[in-house]
Structures are given as structure tokens and as C-alpha cells.
Image 1 (cartoon, rainbow, N blue to C red):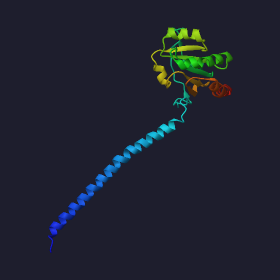
Image 2 (image 1 turned 180 degrees about the vertical axis):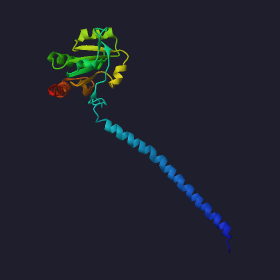
Image 3 (image 1 turned 30 degrees about the horizontal axis):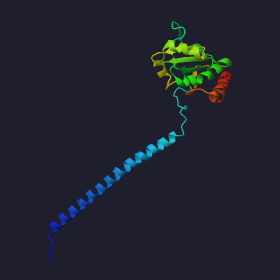
Image 4 (image 1 turned 90 degrees about the vertical axis):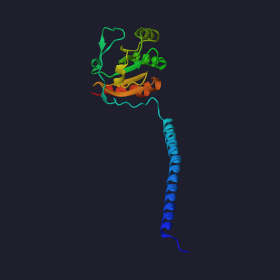
Length: 205
């Protein structure tokens, strides 16, 4: 029996089209399955990596760069200003704190001990706090600071890359930030990290 060649061509074309549509549909279904799986695996990997990160080791873009300039009122003498330029030629610490900060209460005894050693001047950076509450807090728990400044609206803290309180910056004689510690200072941090670094920076010319 003879077959109309035109009809045969149409049938073949239809079969090819069906095959193409079927292939596209299969590929689409595979993509819809593997894309969520790939996203899930990626998220799990990042979460797993996060288990091994030290929350105190928050990188700072300011390390080995000049300490941002500011002029803020002193906590105990609001009519007077303080600027980091006044500490030029000295190794010093800037400690971010607030009377509302529970972790600051934890670290405060270690700052008091540091102040008694008279190894390095510590400037307090009172962040988004009520000045009266801040001064009462220092009376109650001790004042380890050479002076404290008030950053009432938090704008200067932004320039310093402050994430929260407490945070502590180590500044060298040239006014460069050499280290940033995020979170409360304890005996281990003080004796194994801060004090050795402070001694080394003080020896440097």
C-alpha cells in the first residue's frame, strides 16, 4: 500500500515536536527539583561554617587605619570636648559601653583591674545612654576611664564601625587602630591578647 509522502512528513514532524516538548518538560521538572535542593545544601553549608566562627572576631575595615576623628562632649564635663588627636603619641584604648549594657557590667571589673595597673589609658565611649544614668553607673561600679565621652545619637559610633556594646579598640601612638575586640573583656582576653599587644605597641617607636 502506498503512503502519501506529505502525510508521512506531517506525522514525523508532529512526533519530533512531541519529543521536544517532552524533553523540555523533563528538563524543567529536573531543574525545579535540583534548584531548591542546591539552595538548601548551600544554606546548610553556611550554617555549618557559622558553628565554628567566634562571634568576638568580627572583622573591622578600620584595622591598621587612622582612628576616625570626632569631637564629643565629656560625660563629666559636658562643656568640654574630647578628640582622639589629644592622645597622639600614646597607646590607648577606646571602650564602648553603656549603663543599659549587661555585658558591660560583666567586663567592668576587668577594666577596673586594668586601670589599677596603670598600663594604658582607657577612654570610655558612652554610647546612646542617658548621661545621668551613665554617671550613676560609674559611681556604683567604679570608673576605670581616664575620661568618658557621650555619643548620644550614635553617629560617631557608625564611623567607628560599632556593632554593639561592649567593644574595645586599641590605638597606637600614631593614632592607628591596631585591634578591635567585640564583646566583653575577660581575664583571658586581657592577659593573652590586650596586654601583650599594648606592651609591644608601647615599645615601638
